[in-house]
Image (tube, rainbow, N blue to C red):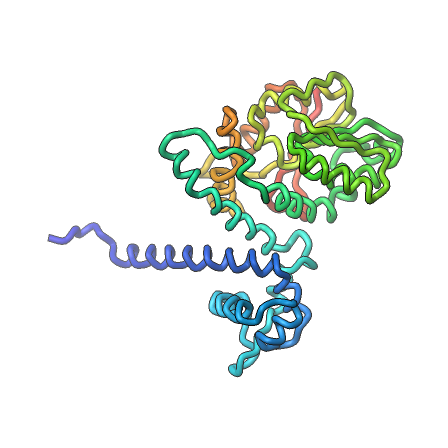
Length: 357
């Protein structure tokens, strides 16, 4: 006898949902490729065009472009300009897919999907036996993070993010000591150093490639007030040295995040400020049902942030540690005043302004 409680309609709807997931995953891969080879940027400048014309304008192989267009059209991203084989990227779609879109460019984070897929098999082994996948297995991750965060910093760091702290732009104009913890490729440090030549900036990161990228950019910009040190920030080892410490989406990745926060508190002078940017989710799964890109962010957390920490014997905090846990850890590190703010240019992150006084 059939199970009378089985809802056939619900089951079929769920199957349709999974088919949408499969199509979405495939489109994420094609979107990543389209961003990297410049197809969205090229098509945004063209009238309805054939695959040959699009490939020619982009400097790409037509056969690959034609098949890519098949995925884009059937996925509802590119539209047919005519039944005879022309294609168009509507301006309403280009507003979310091109480099000109700045912080609205959703093709940029699509690159995380193929990057993370490269460590699927090692991660499966971690599911079975524990441990983690080390940072060395992600050679392209820092470049992608730099591109991702760089869009936000270019749009908002000087004019929107730093003014969140009352009086901070004026102090930076006068000249203070600033450190960026987990600086990556150092773009934020160099932007601030260029905007505030009387202040002195240092970026700390354990990646030699990131440190070199920061130094190279500083050299190209002719900056004399920005420097970079290869350092494990778990052992920051500074005392009452800085007026401002920043950490842009870096704390949740740390092997021992609580120890890093302790070190930051020690490194700040009495009236110093810690400006921490991190994912603006809740610490509770049930509160994240409507959080933008929540499944995407939990996946990045599982396949990068958490497992990298565990690979090095860390706590595996993960990207979705959430505001409640962040406030708790900041308080335990000695920060007595904590404000959480948001900005229009960054719908995913919260901005924590923390002081010891």
